[in-house]
Length: 312
Figure 1: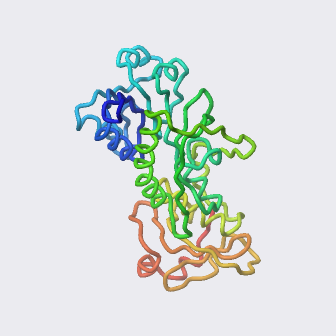
Figure 2: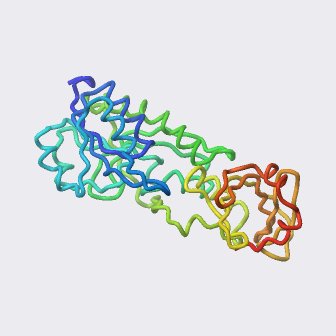
Figure 3: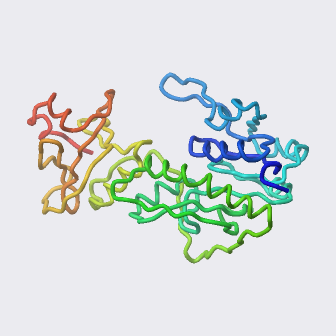
């Protein structure tokens, strides 16, 4: 068997999975794609296909959107893939499917396992101040990202990185890693390394509550959170009963005797007191308006108005 005639079923959903699928389409025989159903997106509730579905249809590859994974077990058996590959799929793959392909089922996971198992590994790596992240390719089992590891690629996290830039870096690195790994699996020369469960951390699904910035937290934690939620879904503060998305900021240590007050207004930042200093906001998105840098925002509002902000 060569990589070119390896029969693959791919499971994935978001934009992050598209480069991986594209590599497989151009290097293997993709028999079918399993992804989420079309969803209503945005304020206008437009019915939208997943990015993975869009790419699959472009190349006339059968796309399946089951409500439950049990609905496609028979289809997968009929297709008889050599291997199943998932990337940012968002659903648990049952054992009834894991046992079908002779080369097994593998997952492309956006962290250096066993650190940050779960749904939001990139966000948690940034929020936690990690200096490095990466992609792990692993065999799937019935647990949540608990299977044996096959290969990894590391990507440094710079202080300037956001979720968007880390996503881009991993989207670039992951397809190459997968292709190299797939060749080794086909040739039976790949590694199979047990995860050290004592070093496990979990990255749960991002919730609406997590988007709010708690100004009682340390400044560096707030900055990391802003980076981790940029460009989606963004963090926010409630200012004068309106939601302001906070999209960029830095922190400087300073003594403050209150929390949640505007204490400085510079040419290009608004400084808000937090538990251990000042959170300097440099980009924001007022409710109903476009994102803008603070320098532009200050051109259209009086400083007295900002100084009287009630921030929650």
